[in-house]
Image (tube, rainbow, N blue to C red; front, side, top):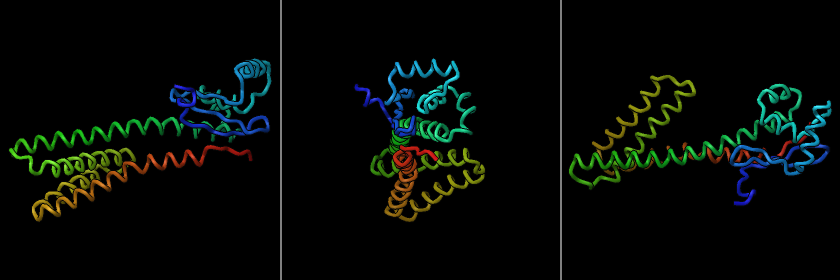
Length: 214
């Protein structure tokens, strides 16, 4: 695997009156594309003697040391924005991996529940309908916990899940066709809510790939 394949985000920042690029690797390390290793060692040595670090090295140091970041973020907006965007890029990648694994988990859980229900009823005629319904209920619980994390009350969560279950039962009693339609609609809504944050993160990172000086 080449070094380029390991990079997940590249940010352009002002440094020494030029536009320099800083790349973030999958392992969470920064690569200063416009500074050689010898130059970095020299600049770090000069800093110990009272010299001022180039912006790229300040960002790298802030990335590696939270205390350095907290000390300098208020008087260096480039450093502050760079570390913020780099953190977002790194966390976004981890979130994407977790969401993909979570997506598989939801479908597997829905599949297992559908198998159990079908075995209890001794028929697999409605297997895929049960699968969709189970997936929707699991997603309902997922968003309840998500909303609870953002400060939504427990009562709202209980109401939300109860609403999904009651509406599902209601439609199943009225018409099998309506039950299918309801579950398809819920499935599309949950998929939309699940995928949109990933897409928005990607778009945001594309937009914030360059920082300008004031």
